[in-house]
Length: 183
Image (cartoon, rainbow, N blue to C red; front, side, top):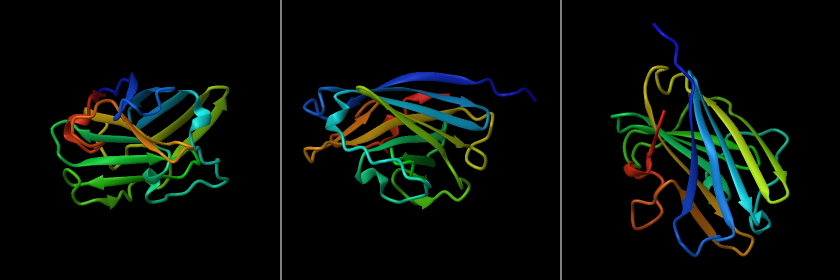
């Protein structure tokens, strides 16, 4: 049995609305090395416009992180309808959910008990790195489809939704066609 070769790809997210945060860009890298999925999000431009929660001393699993600035990743084994949703706040708080189908059967994924993340802010750039272990989620040799997205809360009270694509008439990170990357 051969080992899984690390793979990675870059991404650039687009806002759902063309009016949203024209002074910002969201780019990054997603990679997989065997049992670990690693994401690096880079928000650049006028990041002073964003509400970025402060890093907490002890990050924990929290619900509804998507109601504020939050980086997200959706992934599933190619050909399967069940999928996982990863939420990571700039604060370090996080969660992973399991869905049995499109927006169906949502449960907290118990196979993930911790998540590594770190952030940095330099000038006009905010970076969030995170890594999730895939043990109990997908097989080491399974090819996965990935949708990368984020919710950005602006200091003026607006919220924008960023993803690889927006296949529906409303922002919908769960949409099957939003899983555009393969590793």
